[in-house]
Amino acid sequence: MECAYAPFNWTQLEKTDTAVDIGSASYADGYDVVMGKYIAEQLGLELLVKPIAWEGLEPAVNNGEIDAIIAGMTATPERRENVDFTDPYYESKMVVIVRKDSDLTNITSIQDLSGRKVQGQLNTLYDTVIDQIEGVDHVTPLATYPLMVVALQSGEVDALTAELPVAAGVVASNPDLTYVEFAEGSGFEADTSVSIAVKKGNTALLDAIQGALASVSEEDRQQWMIDATSRQPAQE
Image (tube, rainbow, N blue to C red; front, side, top):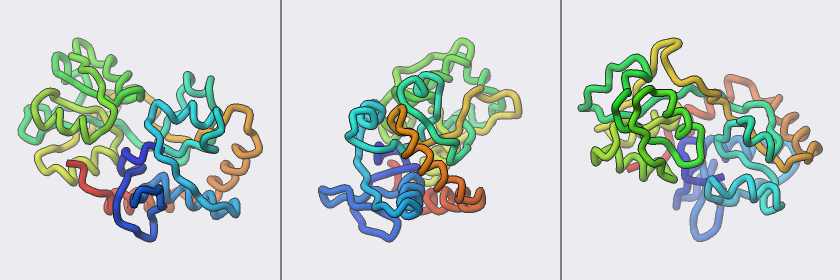
């Protein structure tokens, strides 16, 4: 995982019950870490988290550097060509983050962003969907949300695309920002579910992880996200 995509995963300096040691006096925590720990326990294994930049995750699982990607990753058709995915372990919705003092706080459709500067995260669905907005000024994506938040606060961009849990965490840490949910049928057309990826053809591990996931109730999945969002560090 990236260890930089709260509330799914992040890096912290404090040792806690939910965090995992990743070396260099740092720890990883977040929804993905909790899910990973649960799956490892069900399989009688110990979870080892390796921080890897987003664009390096698929190569890492295919060259054997890691066994699985648990990083808030959506199983797109393009990614399915390179790795195998479990069923979704969390489903969200897509929103945009805007400045609280902007005139975009009450928009109801993504088309209300026409002519505005909108930014997404590099090499993710949240960048590619921006082109669904007619006449949008599609700003060059950035690698992480903390960098994107700075761009929004400084006025370089007007809105950031994000999934709801991420947006909620950003807004909780930055009272000058808010997020906008769209009316039914007026939002982005995109799959916002996230799944776990393994090396293509590794059916034994895929089936084992899938079996562990099947034992997690929907109530637990939602509660783990609420808990992760509440304890994530400030993204300023």
